[in-house]
Amino acid sequence: MTDAPIPRERGPPLYPISDEVRRSVLNEAERLRLLSPTERDLIRLVHEPGFPRWLEQIKSIGGCAHPIYLAGHTTTRDAVTGEVLRHYDTGDDPGGRMPVRCRNRRETRCEPCSYLHAGDTFHLVRSGLLGGKGVADGVQRHPRLFVTLTAPSFGAVHRASGPDGAVCRPRRDGGTCEHGRPLGCGHKHADTDSAVGQPLCPDCYDYPGHVLWHASAGSLWNHYCRTLRRHLATAAGITQTRLREHLTVSFAKVAEYQKRGAVHFHAVIRIDGPDGPSSPPPVWGTTELLESAVRSAADQVEVRTPYSPATGERVIKWGKQIDVHPIRSDAFTESTAVTDNAVAAYVAKYVSKSVGDAGGIDYRIQDFDSIRLAPVSAHLRALMAACWRLGGLLELEELRLRAWAHTLGYRGHVLTKSRQYSTTYGALRAVRADHRGGGLVALEDRDTVTESAWRYVGSGHSPAEADFAHGIAEDVAALREIRRDMIAEGWRYAA
Image (cartoon, rainbow, N blue to C red):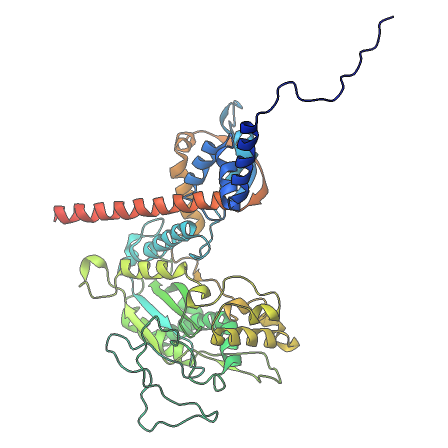
């Protein structure tokens, strides 16, 4: 029988820790404690085994500010032999997941994705003016107009002086409103002046009318399109039901917020033949006829809001200001005209904007206290409050004013188009994906079967990851500017 081992009594360590080592450990802990959360997260991130691969992934999505993370796999096989032609699995990626772009169009939310969306918008609008991307080249010879439709006045607001340096609202006889505020303004306001767009008298301003107009703007546009077709038929001396036998009307429009917080629309309107862009319009379908119908329809169209004892039944119409310009081809017109590329660039510029660029917010409001604390001007806060109050009325419930209080009651898409105007965002994304896929082109001639299984596993960045993504986005933007300058220099030397 062997004796049981005698347990070793507690005592000093076999290898005593020197005071110098102890101080070093304590100093390192102290240094880490003094670091900011972002700096500590940065140390954690760069020491991750998959950090280089993660960096490659974020570069591949252009430094997206709020990526969506997916986990799963995709396998492409030959439909006849079952041979695996392509396989991708996120199991070997950092965290077992793959980031994809958020695709947010708002520049305030994600600048890299908004730039990509603006580029897609440019090509979408441009192809409807010059052809290409599935649209016949003959559309550039069809009647085309660039139209701006505005909201009516809901009360006098301060205006920027403009290049002529005129005063805001000159008034010789002065005078005050019923609330004791001046009816005019003799100051000169710069575009960046915070007073621009603010009402001269908030008590005189029609805030209910403003938000109800926003809530009905989409319906007003739909009625306008129908009225425009009816006016074209009347001008041609045919019935509206037979108009489709002679021509079709296509459009693409974008919504823009003015400084006063009111939406106005920029639209490209085009006449095609009965078969769409591939067929020419009738001889009588001229640019002059289209312009006349555009103006007359804008004057006559109207919709009405649901009746409420609080607001009555409001008549919703376009404002008196309407701009109509024929669109000329770049190659056949002077530089001062409204041209194809200029219109496409203009629309693309505003598709990445939102109410936030007019001083508002781009997130939903959950309660009335959020309106009181919102970092906006008193004018926009009053518009949001009007949405909240009117949205609580049962008879106006269908307008969903509370859900869209952050957009001042406007709930339409920033860009809409008719089906036959041009290509689609989905088609443009598919072409870009095929271009970046590289090897996918080699599989086009083979009969393949693809099996995919993906699931959402997270979104967004940690503080350190956000810094890296922001730096990557800045580098991409800088390289883009350098490339643009090099192309411009090349053209200059070639000329």
